[in-house]
Length: 449
Image (cartoon, rainbow, N blue to C red; front, side, top):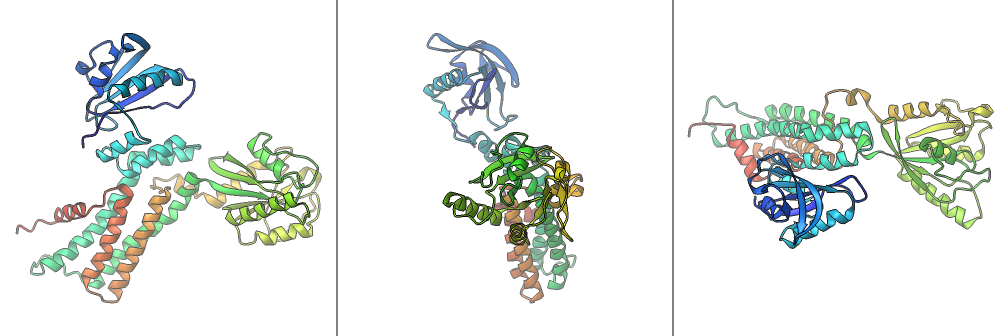
């Protein structure tokens, strides 16, 4: 594909040692060469770096290093120039303005990666992984993003498509070339085990993706408890900062307080709530209603109880309110004694003030949400919600195909569902056109006719 020449800053805004300005397109070398005093960039070898100055109508703007990358061995597969200038927004913006005045267009958000995809350099899964790498906040997030960028997801999806395609190709041969003796007659009885095997594999991948989604998206975690039980102290202790105001006065927290925490490789999206109790205070009552709403939307509840006193009626109400939800019971104030009596319930004993017992809490969260065996294996883990959603559509199409076969519908009805499954898989990688299906299908058989 041929596109116009675009420019944008690759480094973040703010004061820094250097900024990198990226230019991509057929005219990259000539457009930058017009404002560059130094070696002739149009005659430079690929993957070389050149010293010089950027100028504008005779005025020197900055001392720079310019890197040259020639098509097709570049990120976008186009000619690319990267200008390394001094840090600060002003210098970079001036250089970009000069290039725009010379006919280069300011790139849209994500346009360099979009070009890499459109030019066949990467597929959609690899493009999405680039943003995941940039946004990574834990080692596990980075690991999954790297595997996706490496092409592991693409290989997985392509293999699944290949398996479906083999069944489709056999169906096509049975329909179009029934006279061939060496072609297995594909009856519904023979199709069902083939599709069932595929479906079992899809179900396994979806199940394993639960771990991937937790790593990528984090766990929406709500801290609840009666007033003055130590919820805000727990939040501050986990974050290692005074995020929430802590006093001995009940009802200090009136509104939701949100924060994000990397807890031993698991991202918790923490919400500290107002203490739940009956109150006539209008503002506090609004906060309590928000707390109840947050509970209904949470992936995990941290229910904080005061270990130094017996269960109160309010504690029992909260235990009932969170029944059936994924929750961890936390007995706070362990340094003041233990008077809690919760038969049949597991309680993590902590002292939020003294930072005691928090490692047990981290281990419990990982136990509930992460499958360490999957995480430490060579299994390709899906984590992107779009990918998993498409995989669920594939599952539905395969289930429909099995039902059609069991109902003894004509074999070409089954093929329709299989084609739908194949196309949904292709939407994950961005390669799912009818032409792709036909080309792949015909490449499977050479009947000499």
